[in-house]
Length: 243
Image (cartoon, rainbow, N blue to C red):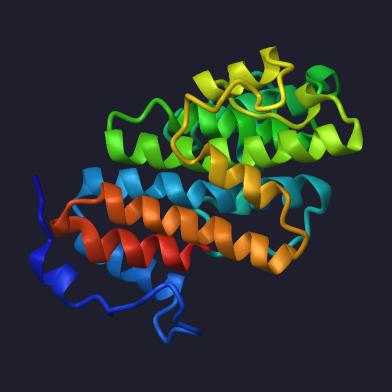
């Protein structure tokens, strides 16, 4: 397993309360591309797919939209996939991840309206399902953490507003299924997640900025607890820059 000792040693020291950094996410990704092995580079592309989701939705809404360069894929790749689907030609699977191709196929065939979610949430749901198939345990757990936090806070908000939970809960992990099937006050999660009570308190926070800051802190603390020393600087920098 690659340890990347020199790369890690060269990363800046940061803390949660640091202000603006001179080392941007773009800088970090450029350094990653030149330092990681092919297999590890492929793994890290999972994190950048969130920008591809935004780019694809923006592109489908406006073909002239400027794509975020932090994404993995280009306008040409989106367009070629759409043309292949419309003409029923085979499209190289390696060109786009399977979940993006699934979304595009349903978009082209006008099948998105019956999903019960907004297009953005449906694409996010496909994304999290896709990320959950990675063989890397740490990455799976990181995606599950983010999915759980988002779904639990959305579920509390939906209850306050009288919305249907099925329209705000995305993904298909065990926590998502419990939320959808449970009508109790605690969503059936008190004994399932050690950070659930923290999320209950966050759901009652009225200051949006403070709420987002505390969510970030929750993720930061999780990383400190989960990551091994050899990965400590790497994961902190990446998670901080992804905020």
